[in-house]
Image (tube, rainbow, N blue to C red; front, side, top):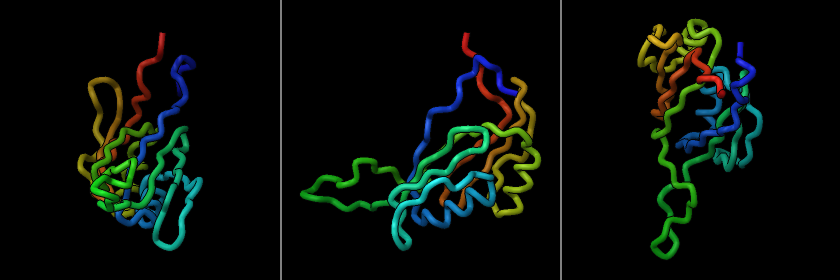
Length: 142
């Protein structure tokens, strides 16, 4: 249950992917994200939004490579695939862990209890991004 003083999530982490369409399918199947919007043609994804059931979500798109124009990078958001990390609040960590494992996620740490009252697990997606899932929702604001 969310404390009424804890604000709803309004931060949307972003990442790039070598194979964005495959990563989207993985994040939906393994972790339970919901595909909200995917824009692009063929294998290329210009912009995608995946919503998280408890609020917020992530945005992602296809890697744009090292293309340059006159010696300067043409990508104003030059994130490298596989360099992303995120903490995501979830309710049933053990069930989510089992789902992720069944879908082929690389589990880095099986579910465990923290000294601050959270139940967590950690995984890596096929692109190499790191995901930490836990029940800790942050401290309520005063």
